[in-house]
Length: 230
Image 1 (cartoon, one colour):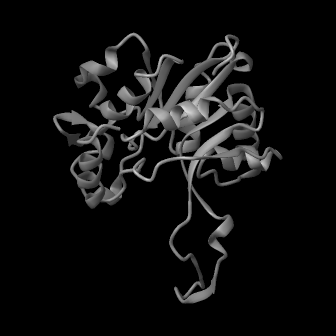
Image 2: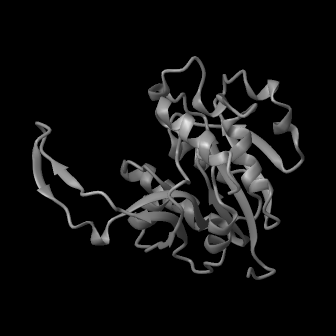
């Protein structure tokens, strides 16, 4: 499936505060089935033999990592995150010694239900354009005016909802993020930075249960998914 020359390292930005969760701590440290969301997320990556290392970017004043024993595993490396997700990812990329020979999997810290088969399909992509997990839009999509009224209905047949992991060659992604910073471009995911540089990442169809925990109700849904065999 993977060529021997390719090395895979995961970068997990985990410096966010998760204000929409309305919880007393960042969402990645909330617990599901006795483990933090972050531990579930990292375990899904650690379980794959192709992933040689995970770099986790945490906030500089974050008190929780020192309390979590699972973060002391030899395959996990902590680094300091930034004020934005993109800056945290960039800081993680700066920790990679040979970015031109490394492919990076950027995965959300609060996306704990990653399926092994989805990850396998993503890792099969060997193309400098890279690839992301995504799901086709199934709901009717409306574009709104500034007054929150419907401007028009979009054609959903070509619309996809981006997920993570997102897979790119580390040196190309690092350069793309640098250029996005210089141009003042708002990077909401890694693919958008690559698109800015003219790349056309592949869309790999993923499962709908690879949810990102964002709101309080998502925690119960993730617990339900994790209670099943993923």
